[in-house]
Amino acid sequence: MKKIVLAYSGGLDTSCAIKWLKDKDYEVVAFIADVGQNENFDEIKLRALNTGASKVYALNLQEEFVNDYVFAALKASAVYENRYYLATALSRPLIAKHQVKIAQKEKASAIAHGCTGKGNDQVRFEVTARIIDPKLEIIAPVREWEFKTRDEEIDYAKKHKIPINVTKKSPYSVDINLFGRSIECGVLEDPWHEPPEEIYFLTQNPKNAPDKPEYIEIDFEKGVPVKINGKKYDPVSLLHELNSFGGKHSVGRVDMVENRLVGIKSREIYENPAGTILHSAHNDLESLVLDRETLHYKQGLSYKYAEMIYYGLWETPLKKQLDEYFNKVQKNVSGTVRLKLFKGTATVVGRKSKYSLYKESLATYGKGDKFDQKLAEGFIKLWGTPYQK
Ligand code: ARG
Image (tube, rainbow, N blue to C red; front, top):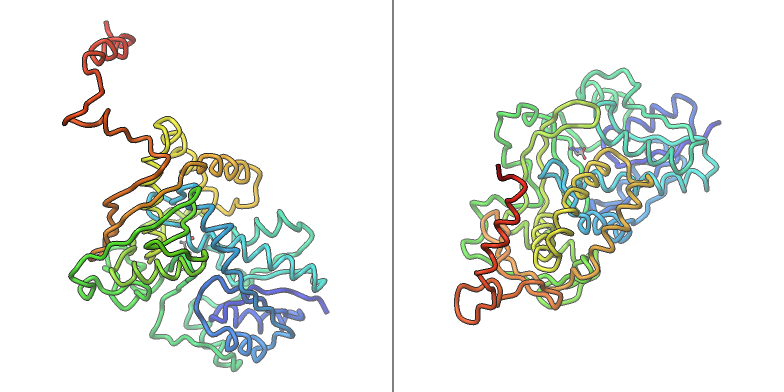
C-alpha cells in the first residue's frame, strides 16, 4: 500500500479527501499545521482518525510562521495589489515544507492537499514541495473528484459518515492564521454585493467600535516589532495582542477584487488587524530612517517580492536574494511609532528613532532655519537644464 501525507485542516475538502484517497488505496497520514487558527486541534486530530487516517501529526508552527514568514514579508513591505497582506499566501510554503519533511520521515511516496484547481494555494503548495523534494508525487483530490458543487460534496460526506462541521447554510470558504483571515464564496462571489456583517470574525462592526480613539506605541528593532506600549512581547503574542487591539477598533477590513495566478479575477474579503497596524507603522518608520533613494528603490522590489509570494515562489533563488537585500535595508529601521486606532482606522500620529534622518533645522519654516534658500535657484536651473529648449 502506498503512503500519502495529506495537509489536513479538518474542513470539508480535506475530510472528504481522506476517504477519497483511501478508496484509491492510499494509507493516509494526516498533517495538521497550527499557524494560529485558534482551533481545537485535539478535536481535529480525532476527526482525522475517525475519518480514516492511519496516523496524525499536529505541529505548532506559529513561532516559525511569524519569525521567518510574516516578519520577512513585513521587512519587505510586501503587499499584493496594494491591499492584500498575504496572510494565506505566506502560510503555504511553511506548511508545504513541513509536509515534505513528514513525508520523508514516514517514507511516504506522495503528498496531498485540499486545494481546488482554480486557486493560488495549489501552486504555492506544489511549487514549494517540488523544489524541496522533486521525487514526491503530488495528488490534489479536489481537482480530480467528481463533485460539481459544494452541496454535492456535503452529501458525499454525509453518505460516508465523514464527520464535518459545515452546513449548506454557511457557504463561505475561510482561511485563517495569526496574520489574518481570508473569506470568499457565497454572496461574496458577486463583486457588487456588500459583504454581510456575519462574515467577520477578527474585527468587530465599526458601529460597535469604541467612540474614543486608543493610542498604541510599537517599538521596532531592525524592522521587527518587539514591544507594544513599552512592553516586550514574543513574536506570537505580539501578533495576538495587535489582532485584539485592531479587532476592537475594526481595523484591517479589506474588500477587493484580485488577480489570481491562474488568470481568474476573484473577490476576496480580508481581515488583517495586526497586519494593517504593523505595515502602517513599519512603512512610517522607514520614511523616517531611510534615505530617499533607498526608500524608492525598495518600493519597486517590495512589489516584486509580494508578487513572488503570491505566485508561490517562496523557495526560489531570487526570493532568497531579495531577503538578504531587505535585511540589509532594515539595519537602521529601529525606533518607535505611535498610532491612533479609531473606528476602522490605524493612523500613524508620531514616529521617532535614533537613526532618524529628519532634520528639523532644514525642514522648519520657523526659527533656527539652516536651509539656505538662495541655493535653490541655481539647483533648479541645473535640474531643469536637460529639458530646456
Ligand atoms: N486569495 C487569497 C490568496 O490567494 C486567499 C486564498 C484563500 N482564501 C479562502 N477564503 N479560502 O492568497
